[in-house]
Amino acid sequence: MTRKRLAGGVCLVLFLAALGFGAWLWRHNRRQMPPVPEVLLSNEVDRSLVEAIAAARQAVLRQPNNASTWGRLGMLLLANGFAEQAGAFLQQAEKLQPNDPRWPYLQAVPLLVRDREAAVPYLRRAVELGELHHPSNPTPRLRLAEVYLEKGELESAEQLCRTALERQPDNPRAHFNLGVIALARNDLEASVTHLTRAAASPYARRKAYIQLAAVYQRRGDRALAETFSREAQQAKPDLIWEDPYAAGYQQLALGRQQDFLTAERLEQEGRLAEEAKILQTVAVEYPDDRSYVALGVALAKIGNYAAAEKVLRKALQQAPDKINAHFTLGVVLLRKGERQQQDGPADAAAALFRAAADSERRVLELKPDHAMAYLVLGMAVNHLGQKTQALDAFRAAVRCRPELANAHFQLGEALAANGQEAEAEIHLRHAVELAPAEDPRPREALDRLRKTHRP
Image 1 (cartoon, one colour):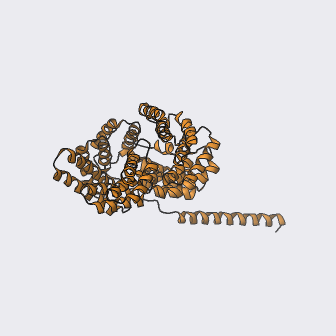
Image 2 (cartoon, helix red, strand yellow; image 1 turned 90 degrees about the vertical axis):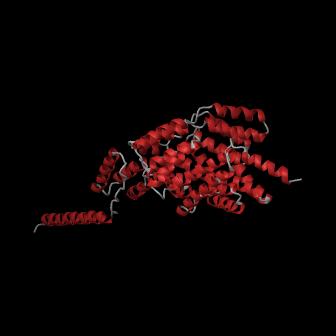
Image 3 (cartoon, rainbow, N blue to C red; image 1 turned 45 degrees about the vertical axis):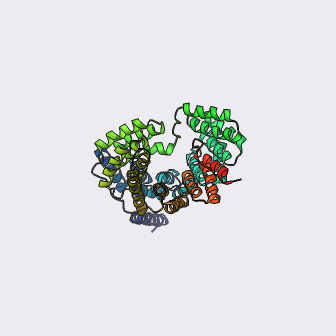
């Protein structure tokens, strides 16, 4: 055999070995892929959405090593209200494409609504990856800053915002957050500087005016405080912050979800009656627990508590363990009780407060760390004169969500009424620091406590 033929034979052997190894590797990787989860849908889901989800799942089955197919199905589910089912697909997309900041960011999106602390590690990964691959998109960085701001971690929040400003010096969201941070530190000059920059944007004008009113109130300049308060009342509702990653999945919304997004926009614009009208139509077309809860929440916002109670009870007939239905029903019953307390017999009001407390207790059976349920429970039993139980509930609300101004406010008021003035002052001070500028109750309560209980 000539040397040339020998070399050719060796090359052929190596080529066939490589093919064999490649086939083995492909089969091995395929075996390592997780099974593609089934997507569970109710009978009321739009046919167009059912078909879209089925097609997207088939694409995953055909290309199980493709991050885009997993990610698109996750985004389709997220856009159409199936956030919990979306998580598995987005997680796998991140495993297959670990350098793309979209995947951890989109996993954080639903958590920002129900468990902000759990969203932090996802946002951190999105920020780290975005630094390398999408440096022009500051949204993950600023959303993480806002979570830190709520938690009172001002240095971490400030650092993130200043990094965003280094790249986009006029970014209104970064300026607004820095203005709020400076106000929390009582650096009023810096707060005015940043809030004034933010107020130039239609995305932040109204909220910046509200904060500027608080700054000038703290400075003792009542004239300017009143001017900015009036400007805030007259300003159009702020536009929703731009979010390129959210825009990428929201365009996949189909059928009912498009109506939900329209309702969300109307809520942001303060057009609550129009929001309720759209959701009323949705509930007729899709009479399931999801539609009923959305409508119940909207009706509660406009004070139509009788109609809200009716649709929320319909939701619970279909889904007895629906946490948001129990919680919102508790809020509605509490508000009805407060109205009845003013206009009707005391025993009727007491019955509503007891029912409100029962609704929130059911929430806490299903989700023991639901801070808002503890808060509403405390308010309900406080109306019933159960002072010890109210204090326990308010303390639990603060323990679960220490950044909630209203939890500190309610606890401070309850402590003051119970003669525990020193502890009450601590919580009322926290409430003043955390409350939005347009809520005067914590400051008034703190001033009242100091006037009443100090020489």
